[in-house]
Length: 338
Ligand code: WQD
Image 1 (cartoon, protein in one colour):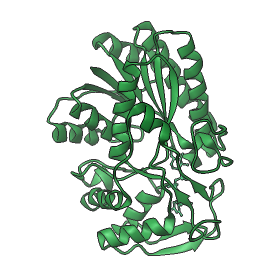
Image 2: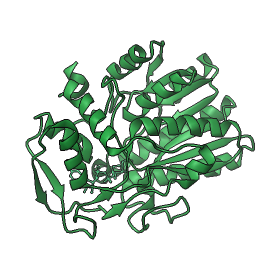
Image 3: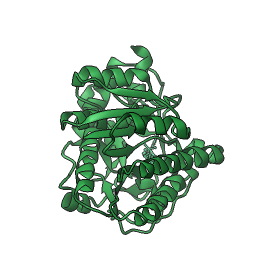
Image 4: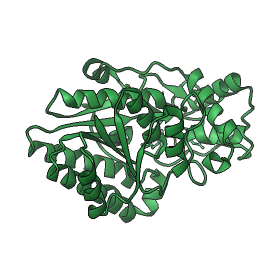
């Protein structure tokens, strides 16, 4: 099938494109490169040995999106494009609401005009807020604690309302927990701009000598060792989850949410120690104060995805650390190192 992947040059998008190609699909990427690199598109091509159609385009520009749908017989869309930094969203809420919501509305209107009714949306476990008890199932209460999370929550609701107006539509809302790792080639990977918000890229940048020391945000949580516990999931497992969700939309006419996680929790200190063991790289750290908005523990109940998508994560923390480091050691400055 011809799949439009918005944000396909990004971290999770690029890995998903590889998995789509491996399953025999044609991929069209629309990405404005605001938080990704053109080189990742070239890398997808060289790894897959397949030609990728790439449009450098802002999804908010209706004409540009219309042109893509006119030029290609698109069968389905996987929608990754959107701003995703929690901290930045608190400082610039209007930018986040305008970009993330408007781009989605333009996409849906264009899909409807062209009778494209299958959509996989990149949502996030952040929609569960801070009150849900782990393991978290899809029926847990939804409550976002920051503008970024609220854009994900609002878009889920927009897609539910929209899909109700189109009987033949099918929408999968994928709620990721903590994506880490990289393709085994080490040719594509996570390349955050500026200081990494997330734990794993910070660890790998310290290991690569790009950052001096890791600050662990609090060790007085009610967890196994006092540090935050999260559900880290290998990005290649996540990519396969998107392919399975796409298949699911072929045989269903619903709008449904799925957790993509391993169902296992790992603490910050456990991840640091695993990383040092696997890579032989030291990761100096200091304990600092808690980060506002953090919860002690957050991991998935992934049963629904296993039962309805026939999908479950298979890669463990060792493989996550190994593949994250393999990417970073080959690209100390990310894609700019190339
Ligand atoms: C993980 C743990 C931190 C950095 C975020 C977003 C969520 C989703 C995934 C997009 C926590 C600790 C972190 C550091 C640290 N993104 N930590 N030092 O906060 O679980 O989720 O990313 O959808 O929306 O909220 O991930 O990697 O930031 O933090 O100690 O330098 O690592 O306190 O316990 P988080 P994270």
